[in-house]
Every structure is written in C-alpha cells, then in structure tokens.
Image (cartoon, rainbow, N blue to C red; front, side, top):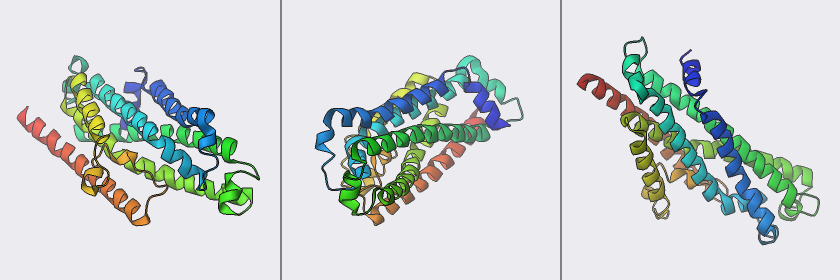
Length: 256
C-alpha cells in the first residue's frame, strides 16, 4: 500500500518519463560511439561485451548517477513542499518506512534504466560484432549461436553487477535529499560527490569504494577476487547508509 502511495506521489512529477528518457540517452552512447568509430573496436581480439563496456560504460554510469541524484532530490522535494512531510507525521506512517519505499521505487527505476541500456548493448553486439565472420566466432572459436548464448549469460551477470554498484548511490542520494529541505542543496552536494569520484585514483581500493565511484566499476575484464571485493563493499555500504538514515530520522524526530 505504501509503495503504491509513493508511486502516486511521483506520478505527475515527470520523474517516470524522465527515467525512461535518461535510460534511452545512456543507451544511445554505445550506439553513437560505434556508429562513428566502429573500425577501432570491431577488430579487437577480446569479447565484444568487454570492448563496448570498457569504451562506453564510464559515460553511461555517469548519466545513470546524475539521473538517480535528480530523481532522489525530486522525490523529497515533493515531501518538503508546503510542509507536506510535517503533516505526514500526524498520519500512521513512519518516515523510516517511507524512506525504504522510496529506495525500492528508485531501485525499480534503476532496473528499468539498466534494462534499456542492456538492450542497447545487445543491439550493438549483434549489429557490429555479429555474424558468422564477426568477433564472436573469431574470439570464442565456436559457432555464432554458442557464442551468443555465452554473451547473454555474461550480459545477465553484468546487469546484476551494475545494479549492485549503483545501489549505494541510490540510498545515499535519498539520505542527502531527506536531510535537506532545499532541493538545490542536496543536488549540489550529490553532484560535487559525483565529480569528486571522477578524480579518485582507482588504483587505491579504499578510495575506489567511495559510493559514487563504485558504479564506474565493470565486471568485464575485472579479476574474480576484485569483483567480489567490490560486491561486498557495495552491500556493506548500502547497509551502513541505510542504518545511518534510520539514526538520522530518530535524532531529528527527537529534536523536533
């Protein structure tokens, strides 16, 4: 019921069309890249998915995070507008539950964005790397059908990995948005954190697990142990940030 309520709150804000438009924009990045410079990638002797993601995922993940930040700020802006969140405390609703419903809703939007982007990767792979004489057969040394099944399996793994890397950003963006009544303050904080993540030296693991730096990590080409370390770090951060939000809401409620 509360999830349906959160959906109704954003139904007329333009968030959902914006989510779809953002996913399409990010999905267009590899298509435009390969349309202009396909000759630089189609002859590389490595899996096509790795080629595309190494070339374009940095830009795609940045667009994803910017969209997550904007949606999170708008979600709480609707709560603070006209002191709606103050009146809501008089209802049998807990702010903690409202926060987690927003997390669930925003996570669902991220799934939609990632699905659109993965469909784009499928199109790029089939169009520029497919065929019996394409990179599939050349790299894997098997039939096109067998190589394509491996590609779909790898794509599913990458989808789950990218979602896990994005989850701490979802929760942290909502935490910042819930703490700031002014939407522009929370937006500024998140954008600064995002651009800080772009200059973090990734060779230091402790710095590379900064929440806004995690989505830049990709599963393709990563060492098995390193990928697991990033997954564990992302899950720990998601739990810690969620716990921090619970403490913040209790302190704010006690001080009110």
